[in-house]
Length: 433
Ligand SMILES: Cc1cc2nc3c(=O)[nH]c(=O)nc-3n(C[C@H](O)[C@H](O)[C@H](O)COP(=O)(O)OP(=O)(O)OC[C@H]3O[C@@H](n4cnc5c(N)ncnc54)[C@H](O)[C@@H]3O)c2cc1C
Image 1: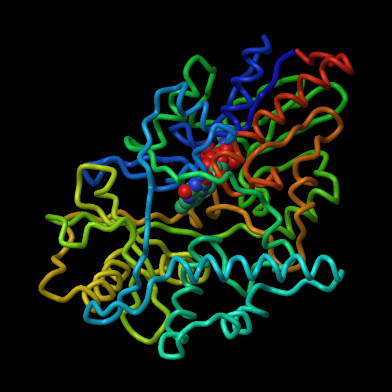
Image 2: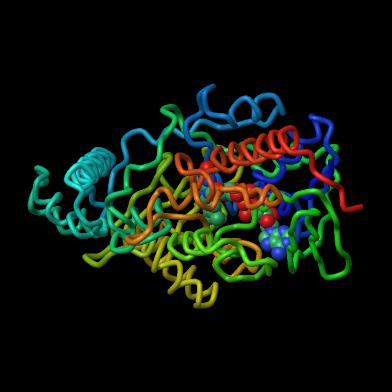
């Protein structure tokens, strides 16, 4: 049997390794000139910086990516934010925020549960958020600021706005309870090591996939690959854009799921300074004015890498708005917010900047998936369903319990490889070559 895997992100690499170990002949085709997809480490600022995924969420043995990270000798750095304080103009401490955010997320999960039990219509998270804030014992003097700050942070976390995200499915996924860890030398090491020994064809942009009883034809710019079946790991954004033509078209229920699910927006703004001028805390939470912050928080990367780096995020609508502007305008805004809080003389000009634009990347078209109102957790399962025993699907948007994550994408690749192997055992496939 021979299989073609479309996409050398972590889902595709996981699938290809599993199949190869089972003695299957596998070719991985990848549009970019590198492996890893949305796991991408850049060294332009003089230290490894992850411009896609940064954290392994829940570093516990049950997390399927953890044994792999350990076996491949990829170093991680504990991300222990501890007590996060929200600082306002002039550095005044507004409040300790982590407790409030956790409380809000728990209340949202309770509301979601109630919607499900009552079988009520879905509503966006924003429908109840103000009410839930009222229910929390927040001192009135900080209520307004905390609300605006939390909304910006929510958009960074979910890659979508509170008025887009489904409340009913807010708590549909699962988490591994454990530390969150950053890759000390970048996540690229993980994917590069996963790719060792695989036949990966870089720079191969798939334009069309034809499939039928005889097998599949994967058509690139320059050549066509014939195989018994294909594992498609194209990002949801790429499927949504119809950038790859399927013949026959994918089944209507799968196309409807692709349409309903949301591809979120999240961009990173990384600043290198001449020296570390900020307090030695893992997360700097800031709210410089009474308006919603564009940069509600920065991660102090200096805790993990040997360089004075801060990483800010633009999530949801802010990502879409701000990345349409110049790098200069984005950095100016970040510096303005930092200077309002930490002081104009204290915050120097950065010596280097890196800004991502995943939304504009033709091979990602967004950051990661989310469930908008009108979609459902089941849509991820529909996306994962194989088609006529020839097309199999993997990727972060095909795994309901762990969507939007490295470990989810990895596990989806294992699942798809398992499906290929089972189908090959159950129904002998006929090679078209
Ligand atoms: C900014 C950002 C921050 C994130 N932070 C975290 C985090 O901290 N922790 C976490 O767990 N997850 C995080 N994620 C999500 C995580 O990166 C993804 O869930 C995961 O990497 C997806 O892997 P994948 O294999 O499904 O998709 P991808 O990595 O996107 O792989 C799909 C591959 O298909 C290729 N491709 C696309 N079109 C074509 C074509 N036409 N022909 C051939 N190949 C094609 C792409 O180039 C890509 O390599 C983040 C993502 C982003 C963007």
